[in-house]
View 1 (tube, helix red, strand yellow):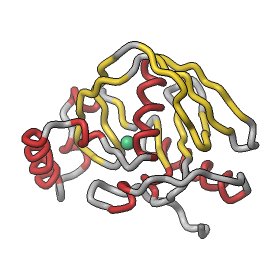
View 2 (view 1 turned 90 degrees about the vertical axis):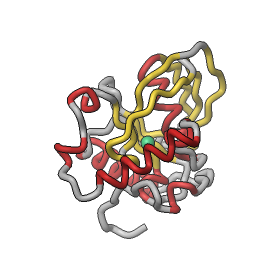
View 3 (view 1 turned 45 degrees about the vertical axis):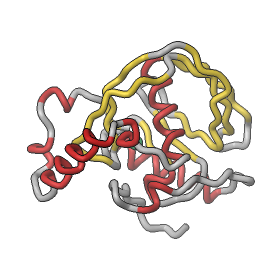
View 4 (view 1 turned 60 degrees about the vertical axis):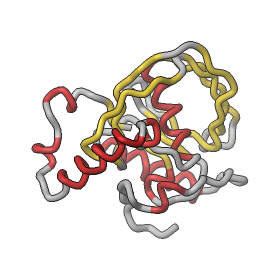
Length: 180
Ligand code: ZN
């Protein structure tokens, strides 16, 4: 990894489909990447970001739903409970929001940037974001939850969005949705 600032990869970029590799050793490189990812997430008004979204094939995510920043390495869901449906957006799929059914509560295990094992019990929005980001580590995107026909309409919409200004992309209701 070089010193250049990270950039968010957009749908169509093959790196979004890569499966992230387990991090074996946490070094300054990982710590630097996690800090850069957090900065980029905040600058993009997102509440979660996964390493594959910036072209890095390592199992790392950052999440902040307003209750504090998590920098997580090798996150793994141990337990899921209940259901919730949240309209999700994704920084890698701009302008698109999809209702996705996920677990309402999760129990997650990960390393922090100091190589300590963390267990996080999350529910509601935090649980949703963690599941969304872990999907990214598997190369899975929100568009994969949409049936084929609906997906074609979505892709058309995405195509039409190109060239428009950021403000014109989103309706008022869409702006209230979460970007992960
Ligand atoms: Zn995403």
